[in-house]
Length: 267
Image 1 (tube, rainbow, N blue to C red):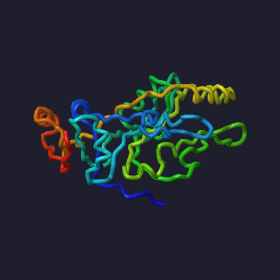
Image 2 (cartoon, rainbow, N blue to C red):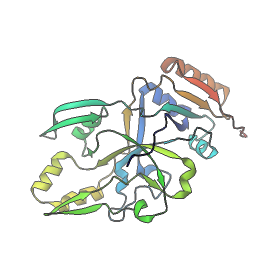
Image 3 (spheres, one colour):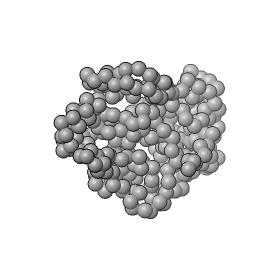
Image 4 (spheres, helix red, strand yellow):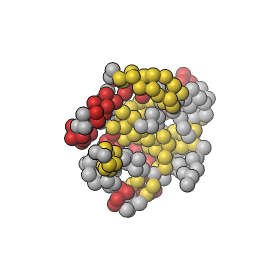
């Protein structure tokens, strides 16, 4: 069954200071589900807040301005970005990579920086790049709070995270949300191999339950990500902030289009 058709463009509400960082660093931040405004995000039936190891960036497919989403811009210097879908840079890697002393053959598409995180932190990503998905709105509890531990026979098991960060309650459906989603578990490849070799399932599960998330991950953008970016300025934005925006766009995104919000909001 095919997934939903991906829009050509997606929209992200933020503020001028964050936009400046995006432009200067040419990266976009994915944050742990544990830091989302929906406190149910990342809940599971059997592993508490396992969704804290899922990292997302929230966008909307709605081209019309949303007062609800303008509230996420926090303050009077809000902006809405319009960018092409699938903004993140990927590289194809087909070689042997050493993770914590273990040589592993890899062949696939990676976001730059993912391999380095797996080499330097107790974390494993699967897949190796952020994927774009549309949020499904539902009130079915088993989807909102799934059971993730699965016995696979012969003493083996699996932790299924594919539904985490995909479903939200219907109260949120006005957001029409799309997400860039990066899935991980807080164990290194070396730990995974060692614990499975020693049949030490308890230590592995304890680590997954108790370890903390990375907080956020900054991923590099494609080289052409800013080529036709559009910036919509909040009606509350000051003239000084508009001049600052113009200056930073001239430096980092000279082809950007700037428009003013059609919403008239009291400052």
